Image (tube, rainbow, N blue to C red; front, side, top):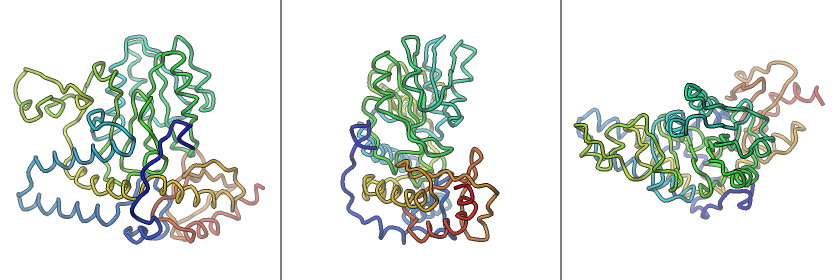
Amino acid sequence: MSPSDGTSSSPVGALDVATVRSRFAPDGVYLDTPTYGLPPDTVVAAMHDGVARWQRGVATPYEYDDALNRARELFARLVGSPPEDVACANQVSVLVGTVAASLPDGAHVVAADGDFTSLLYPLLVEERRDITVRTVPLEAVPDAMDDRTDVVAVSLVQSSDGRIADLAAIREAADRHDVRTLIDATHAVGWLPVAASGIDYLVVGAYKWLLSPRGTAFLVVARERQDELHPVAAGWYAGEDVWGSIYGSDMQLARSARRADVSPAWLCWVGTVPALELITELGVDAIHAHDVALADRVRGELGLPASGSAIVAITTDQPVDLAPHGIHASVRAGSLRVGCHLYNDASDIDALVRAVGPAVRRQH
């Protein structure tokens, strides 16, 4: 996917992707990034240090504030957004829930069939306010919008099989029909260059392709949508003056996207900072080239059609036990799902092809 398709080009990284693999320590062949990403050594060291500071009683909430805000800045840089337009929370569903609660009663939503439920469920539970969600095949999403549609909600990269939505077509149709865009880029940001501009709400969980601990997530909110946010999980961290908002009923919500912030899971943010630093230093363009080249090698060796995705869904005519081969992957939506990222190289792909190739080739 090129910048003209609604993505952005990242700065050229200062590190070489090929040399970074030594900073990871998978046990065997790890091809399961769509389930969770692995931490580089800098993340492990930061979290060990964080636990030690906690154990000694010398950690302070203010240093965790610094970590969260540093992560906010780094993520904002990845997607080309001002930091003040980025909200931070613990999970995608929490942030989508805030967006869902901000929609007007009776809103009509178009979404993709079989999309991840952390995107769909927060919208579906709003049926008590007569909000309706209509799902269509991913490829049909742009044409499904009309003047009655209020929101289009779709994952940029599908969790189940790695299909990439046509973001340019979705944005064009949304602009034409005055539809808000809610894009879940959890399976995109980190390997696919993505720009937040032109998107009303861009949500990302960081524990997969951004190599972070589970418990950190981001929501970029377009400036013109921030006053509409109804932060249903608001607490002291959503206040304009965070440390002045810990007691009492005089609520002064932040005047930016930060009004959707959720009180942070401290140690998770300690680990997220070095993870985002590595992604930023490498540059997403370099990561994209590396990841897709490996995924294309899988597809080529197994006779699967090209897709340009770092995720490959492999259908076999019989179950394949990968454990004896030391390969870590998952089954999703009836197919073997693998994801290629920084800790993988050609030898991992060769091992996968040897393990699954016979079962796949019998279909061709």
